[in-house]
Image 1 (cartoon, rainbow, N blue to C red):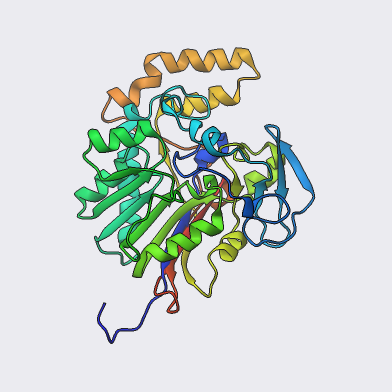
Image 2: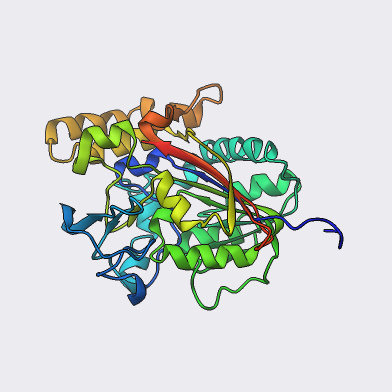
Length: 354
């Protein structure tokens, strides 16, 4: 940036993905839960903790009346969190993936969709950090598009694939790990695709992001909106309420509290869709039907037939749009932020409603 040019706020983009509907998560940024965000106060606005809203998977859930954050008041810590993102998360189905790497074509298609949206943000190829980058398919597509790429990933299984198979610069670390210390203001773009809701210290994340985005840079986020129509219809049964993996659910007001308008500018907030393989979709439905054995067995049989693999073996076959990915009423959102002059950063964001 020229010496005489005006300073800019960091941008951030936030977009929620329907994956959270079924309790799935983007592996990566969950580590030790900080005592400063424990019981007694809201992890985002620090208002006094509200009464119990409901219990999900054995975890107390609270809804902050000030910033509207829905959060787990008793999240897992340390090694228990890291264990959630072992190799089994990427290969055993359930709330995770039946075979993440086998779905490479679908992941790359989604990555190219992200890059097309990013190109419309006036964000020219530069340096990008993908937080919770999994096996690195987005970073690899970004590299092909001219970006200088790097990432951080908590899962050893995913990080090893990104580094050894794709030759990517990916650090095995949670975003807030003390040993993950990139140079300040070193990224033109930081992406967090369905990751923010899994990080144990949202305010710590915001502070570190503001330190890493260059003047005029962008922050792009995807996350889930508990004010969506689908979420309000299902209440506590909304599959996105899925502790211990999903720790938080953010509304637009929550994100505005977290990304203080004094430090960030919200550029955009809109719904977005996510593409998944047929096998992944059937696996998620099978997981949701686990309390109905006949239905679960039927879905498992379909998965094991040629129908479950058709989009991997037939190049002309389209993948599925993640259930609930159609529009803001379903739960997902995309947001883009840029820092304000005081912070020399800009941000934009979108959210999904499912």
